[in-house]
Amino acid sequence: MSGQPHTTIGSGLGIIGWDAYEFVVADLERSRRFYTGQMNVPEVARLGERAAAERGEDAVVFAAGTAKVLCVSPRERGSAAERWLRRHPDGVRVLALRVRDLESAQRTLAGRGATFVSGPAQEVDDEWRPYRHFEIATSLGDVRLRLVERATDALPPGFRRLEAKQPANSFGLQAIDHVTSNFLTVEPHVTWLRDVLGFEEYWRVHFHTADIRGAQGGSGLASTVMWDPESGIKLANNEPAAPNYEASQIYAFVEANHGAGVQHVAFHVPQIVPAVEGLRRAGIDFLDTPATYYDMLPSRLVSRRVSTVTENLEELKRLGILVDGEDDRYLLQIFMVEGGVMYEDATAGPFFYEIIQRRGARGFGEGNFRALFEAIERDQERRGTERTQLEAGAGS
Image (cartoon, rainbow, N blue to C red):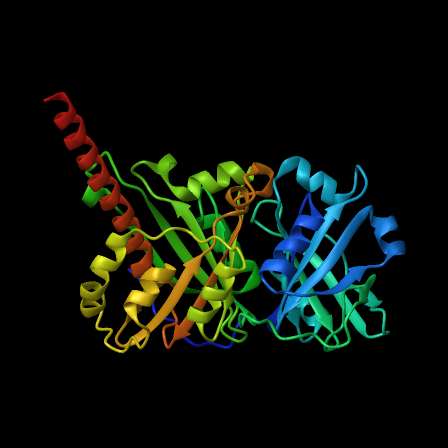
């Protein structure tokens, strides 16, 4: 079942939005080709030589609208990035949120028992604009949370701006819609988000496809979304569901990531159809959607009382875009293949991106989770039946 969002005063941390997320990669040039060459997300800043030498890391900032990713790669053994890559494949190391008042956020977190990794650092960027921050440990594996109070457009300390004016992303990537993480058990993190960060439950769903495959088949997940009502920051959190707990794609992620971690970041776009067309032309691969998903889509939209879809369903089928909603509010979404599949390199990790457009819907595609799982399993059943018939025909 899914919960309905409700409005309160917020987490008490004075969060005003996302600052950035920090992504550790083994191959920085490969990331450059992906972001600038395929995603049209420009490189806007680079870690200066002095700071890079001190940290033993190279780093660049890619930005599209308010969405910023810092890609960090080790240049020396023993650096923080190199130690991360000993334990994990490429993945998110830090999630950073902006706050109005850093001292106030620190006092609030201290009162709630947060574990501080660093005290407040009073720094400035290359143009002498203030950038103040501290980090706390989280219950999300090795991922840390950074709280930032900074001037508008201020860069993290040590970075040098490359472009005076950031060009618009040609695909409409402009903001982070949500961040999703995977765990073997989600409750400790949900409790941490509630008791330490002050987040509230926004939405939850639990489903399994055993009703299609039988008691010994199928797979599923349980997901709880937590949010800060004041800023609108949303963090989705998944765990595998029994039966067949270890067959779940959530379990597979945790194994490949060598622990819990950030599974995907969702970029919001104003128009998903031209965005996906352009991204596909640029060489981006998305997860395949079985034709059976679209065979069931019209009746599913009727059952969910969605009659306002303006996009052409055949066009959505051609592009592999998913649709979900309720009571004439809907969303459209699509998932890229994970890094390890994209590069045929397991060290590139199981992380991936989502592209999402919202037309009034504020949920997370519960119907799509279920419908896509069902479509895949029905397609598997169909192919199994066809194979059996072919084998039987060959033997007659």
